[in-house]
Image (tube, rainbow, N blue to C red):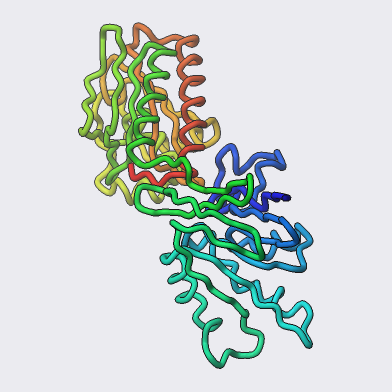
Length: 357
């Protein structure tokens, strides 16, 4: 038996279009991956597990000219979107022979295949339409393909979606065996915030942008005295805070003026109220990756923030807040290192989970 991994990327592949995260901009060839799929060859039978949008490319890469069957794990488009390309296998010896391709799927996936590729199941198909024999399987019963016994294995792709794995001889293939839901992702972010506090002994904030304000989603307090006055669930003008400036990092001057059409009102005597000066600061944040604020929202407090991006877009931000008496170059360097490490881990996680901040 031979197993070939045809793809091990995400539902969008790797790199993701437009994403500027560490993985998607990596020069490592291992970070260039097609969507998930595998090929099994046993006893003269060649089977592919899942046929997503990269199916054609995967078949060409692997030099495949004959295919006996496709096993579908579930109905999502990144696993079924390439089925139309089985026509190449149908007509490889035409004329005179047409080779139908058998597709095996659980009921939910079979319904989607019939719907999306209805033209392949018409009684009078147009010339060149794919020749598919669709088999709806019972996931509780083994099936047989050309004498090869295959045992379906039920699993979950997420809390809402079931998937079908397959055991073929001594080999088993299953996707979604582990997954990260929204609650798990938030717990992991909270753990990383605790790591930041452990590393630099100062308070850490997680915030999102809402109508020009930073909304404080999470706060992990320092064990030291002189704590910050921010409260989870409250908000402050984003332009006056470190976490807020990180959230505004990609805003240009016209966008800032549109967002704050009433102007930038001061929270303290140090608050920046000039749009051009704020725009210049945001340009520096884009260049360095870090946002800085000194007593602009609260007297006696300085902050360092980092934007969190998903597919290149800022979706949230982290910050560390210092009382002025504990701020130093060494303390700032420690905070930047801790924030940057957390940022990398969170952005990597955001590539595989839908999280609404």
